[in-house]
Image (cartoon, rainbow, N blue to C red; front, side, top):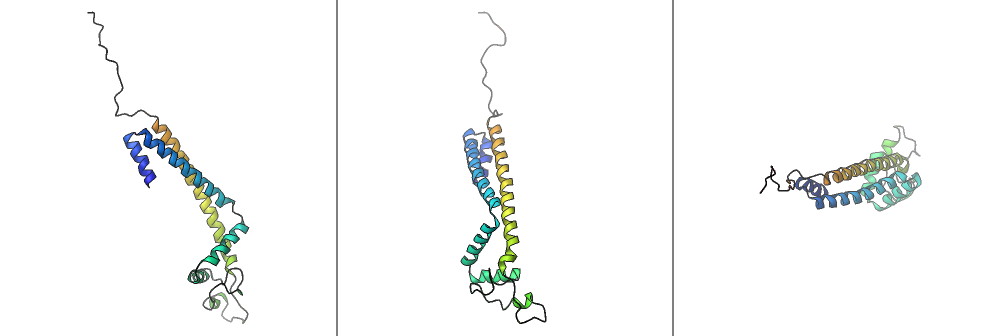
Length: 166
């Protein structure tokens, strides 16, 4: 927001220094945003699984329980491990009414893969769109920065209208 205000003030006041720094900041922001967008699009499924596993191990049990209830799954990679809250609430919804005794909800990794993949792709695509919008803003700022200020009167030489002889 502060960067936008800098650009607006530089444009209103026709201040070339403000517009120059606005261009520099936007270009640096473009570089950061473009690199993050490219890295989001370059993440493969194995890296996504590793990131999801690290995230699962770091969150609290209440968040794990909320994920299990939302996606109707139990545990992260297997239902037998003890790294997740109990699945007693979820098991009746996963299994049909005449539930066999060995019925269990599937692990959350398989249900989350599609969501994680689409989140990475969406973030990467949106990052590319916004980063190229910033390039357009830098170009327009450069064009506007080199325009003549309409409030400034042009310098004129002081010569008489007619050629007087003295």
